[in-house]
Image (cartoon, rainbow, N blue to C red; front, side, top):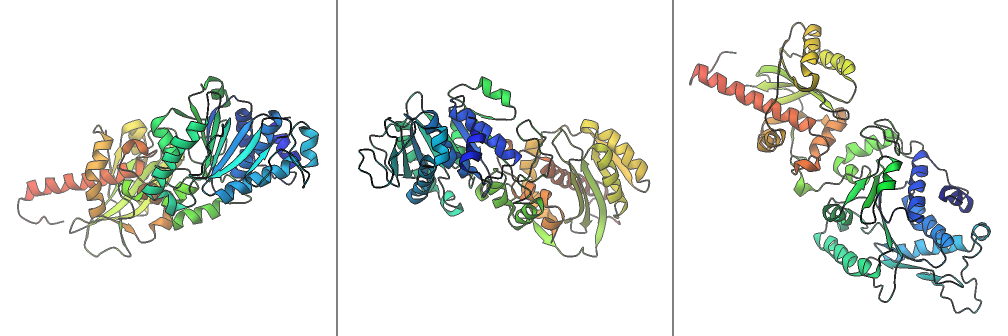
Length: 470
């Protein structure tokens, strides 16, 4: 019996969505031994623990009653709760019909086999299920399969360097020492911190991010298979997650509108909990340090636009209109931040420019930008449109101009509501360049700063110490 069918038999109340079926298919591959090391990240309240810490151990003990499984969580009480749920499945009539060889002690009958809230043994076999809290002892226990479910209780624990180090130490000195050559391990987390145990594993060991089922055929025993279920889909559709961009993982329970409101409330926490993309304040380039404004000052000397067309398939087109006052402070006035095809964004950008006071627009000509600029020029005849090829190193440009971006730019006071994706990508952008998936927004803000700096230098050279008349 496949794992999905087993799950719906012992838990007939389950309402499986497409992502559950993908999740259960991967858990089945783990149960069959085709995957030895598995990482699953999923938003809260989407059923990750039901699948991995309740149904999976019951299924694996049915397939192999001699298996020794351990479940660990941030507290012994939570791990025990998982253990009791598994035991209730093992003694159910439905389970007995599927796996009659896997039985446990029932009631108060005298039996030499152990059954407590923390440990249960399979009658007539060597198999067992033991639960333990983080930093708990497993002395003398050999483990064939380790299930690690949420080793951090909340953000406070995950943000504590001491707790993270204690967790890492417990994992290396307890979990790893209880395992043998054929042992398996699975981590199911809601991410809180980029340097949690999953982050540590990613830094030290080989991890592949699963996109196609065929990739499982080439995975060796030393490689971790990782699958992240994002609450709101980003990036192109894959065989395993065929959702379109912006689609909620479980619309009926956690709608895209609800998730968007949670993202607006706290973008950084949303990226951790719901997107599986954690970042820490100390590792952010901009953070929440952008200054805001309610109304433009009277002495505006220049209106402009800077556009960077999408480099690759899942990149964003970023086009920003701005105003500059007499002190050189730059006020962001409007924005198009989109992954729509170019024929759509050409219209959106042109409409935005025509609705603003922009008279000068700069468009990077890389990757089709020149053709994009020609269309914008045709649709915006009052505006002077120029394009250029950006050949300087993007990483160096963004990092070296970051302080000036914070100092010189002002965002609308409600920009987190007007452009939530732009807000999220900028406030969670990391100092470590390679840790960022998208650079488009940071690149455009950098381009605006560079453009204004070059313009200022030209004016100083032409007018000397005199103030130019604008």
